[in-house]
Amino acid sequence: MLGKLIKNSFKANASAVYINYLAMGVIAVIMLILMFVDWTKWGDRGIGVGMAIKVAAAGLLCLTAFVSMVLTFVAVFGEFRRSMYRAEGQLTLTLPVRSSTLLFAKWLSGSFWVILSYIALYFCIFGSMLYLIRHSLGVIEGDADYYSIYTLVTEMIRQLADAAGINAPDINVVLNLAGVYAIKGGVTACVFVMTVFFAVTVSYCRPFNKHNSLSAVLFFFIATFVSLTVSKIMQNLFTVYIVVSQDAFTFVTSQEEVKAAWMNGYGAASFTDMFVTALFGVGVYLFTVHLIDTKVNVSD
Image (tube, rainbow, N blue to C red; front, side, top):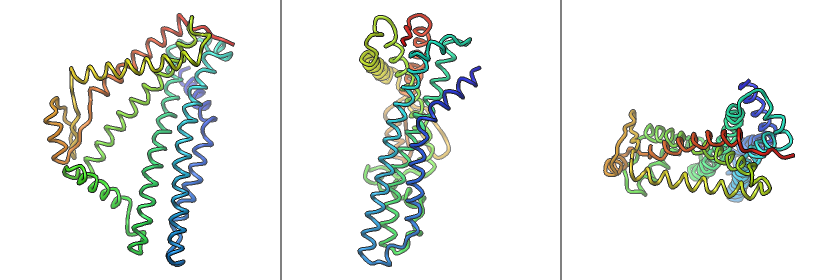
């Protein structure tokens, strides 16, 4: 039954957002085609026009990705409210499954689409930067193909490290650190989705059910404030960091070790913050299940 619920939730959300990813795909294909045009054969004017067209295409791609992210939020949370607490919710809550299972299916599907929208936005922004830099360098050197993505990324990392006054990290360190932050970002996104689901659920509990949208926004900000406050307190009381090297992950507890890691070309990320955020998400999930079982007032 859980598999069917997850499948239906994925399909419901996909039907609302697929057009956004199709639009991004079309723009990306156009940008790829533009890479094979030799703008230099039209002289300085051709180079300028080519750059202007590529800037416009890159900007349109980033704008489309941002709009897609916003529409994904609206679709995920709109589908949750519609299927759980509107007229359809009267049928959903009578299914022979636990409310915890229903909520888990909605949360899993919603988290997937929200995380996917974030990834798409960041890839579009970062990819557009590399796209335009590659064009500029290629025009200067007369050979755009000379500059590979790897060369551009490593050069950008080196320049950023130099600007920050630290040793440039090895590419493996960057990839490992990116993986840690990707996990941290995924945890944050999943907890964000659950927090919004909690706020929507509270808005359908007595005595707030007559002020749905207003109470949902209020409880979302209250829950977020509590999460950030608890995370800050725990960060001060029990500080743990993950230090990332080329081939190892080490847990440390002092700021001096973290600073030394950065100066030596390694990276570091807070483990306490990620752990507390995940724990808070579990607590919000359990409390939301309790509200669905005992307090929710489904409306028409």
